[in-house]
Image (cartoon, rainbow, N blue to C red; front, side, top):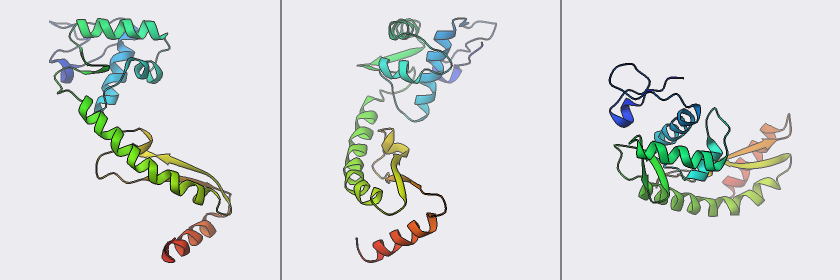
Length: 168
């Protein structure tokens, strides 16, 4: 498999001239996983890379070795416990801020979910979006998904609109 990481490293990975070729599927999977999380400005811990590993199953020690190798080869950088693409500023403060914002919104969710889940025909309430990923921006909203008994969605929507208008 060929991977291009010129955005991250300034080099083409997997091309033929003057570049680094990565033939190890685990290294490719680790890079893909880190690159995906980078889209969200979200550096990952080694255990998270292991949990979210794209396209490959591997033991945690193997993932840790791959992270160390990619860091030593200059393809990843490490800031404390977090790994991220190189040529990026340290994303760990952004991650800590995102987690703090998510915790604030989860406090609201904990107050709302018992009310919502006890409504007639509601089978499940799920927190989703950036709050569920623990990466909420300061202006993030709380995304809740409701699983409702088939054929009852309009009843539940009407009920919640009435409750909202009454100030509940």
